[in-house]
Amino acid sequence: MKTKHLKLWSALLLVAGGLTTLACSDDEEQAPQRHLLTVNLTLPAEVGADDVEDLRVIVTDSRGTNDTVSVTGGQSVAVELLQGQYSLTASGKIKDENFSYVSGTGSVALYADATTTIALSKIIQSPLVFKAIYSTGGIAGYVVDQYYEIVNNSDEVQYLDGLIMSAPTGHQTQANAWQAAGITDLYESGQGVVVAFPGNGTDYPLQPGESVVVANDAVNHREMAPEGNNCPDLSGAQWEVYISNVNGEIDYPGADNLDIIFQNNAYMKAFGLGFFGRGYILARCPEGMTPAQFAADPANLQTTPGTTSSTQYLMIPSEYVLDAVDIREPESETYYPTFLAKDDANAIVGSEAWSGRCVRRKVSRIENGRAYYQDTNNSSNDFLNNQPLTPGQTPTQADL
Image (cartoon, rainbow, N blue to C red; front, side):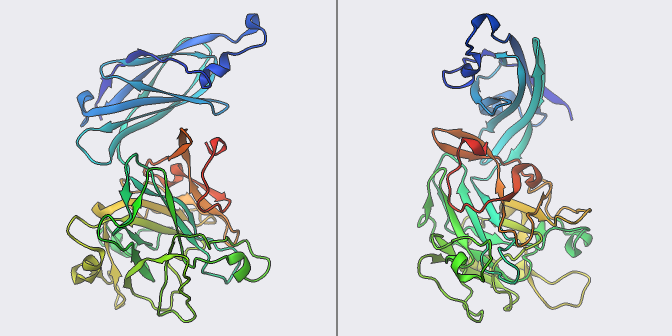
């Protein structure tokens, strides 16, 4: 693809407490040398220089210390740094396109003046994304301790009202029946339930950087599960998946209930069971359509192509998807994508089953104590596996 070369010449002022701390030395005569790094950015062919705003480059050294420079149009970045290893992340917002950005990464070993180029790609970044998914279970046979944490990754208030959660089968080793039949832009709901947040549009605001925990059962599973478990305490979860027709299901009073908008298997005890891997979706219907209306439309239901099965699945269009995460089985040597690349290009290897560990989205930066999370629409790049269960915990600099 031809790209437009965007040359950005401006000086990066290193702020006190940031990368300037690297310049300190007990012996000024022995201070490491400084070199000039020139960063050139290239845009995708369909994006012009005037289409991008809030362009910035984040420079991170080998110790994790980082600094950000805002870039003005029509210039390039010349950065004077101490010699060493650096990673670079560039990003910008595409004007007049909601949730559309350009993004790219690079690295450099700086031991003399150098020039590097970062190729930017156009990506869609959702304001609401999965921060963490725990589906591996804390003890074999105990299946209700999963949770899903959703974070507002934008700088504006977002509303949970009408947000859909669906769990396609995922972790594929070959094309599924719909893909084999040429249907690649619809995602089957898997067996069990599809859920949605209630509300009329503005009932459930989520502030920038804040997250909510959705539990299958909002209770302390350390006490409820058999002894020797690795289960979490979810008694503080704000939301719960209460499936009223499941035998023994309890509606715990501490959390609000999500709406069950679709169910195709009444024997599934919880939402999104995936001890060895599964796909997960956050989606939103077009304006004017409620999740209940969408799920009630027979045109949105399909049986499995090429089979005589009568089981129906609620099919989520790719264009409705805000965030998709594919978790593949750790032991599998082959993988076939569950989603289109624009929704999720590759799967993260799942955490070990029954380990009481989750997959957690990487923290890209922390500004004024608030974490921003990496979102490149590629789970293998955006998530870490075998992470401790810390629902609702605020990340620190150590999480970078």
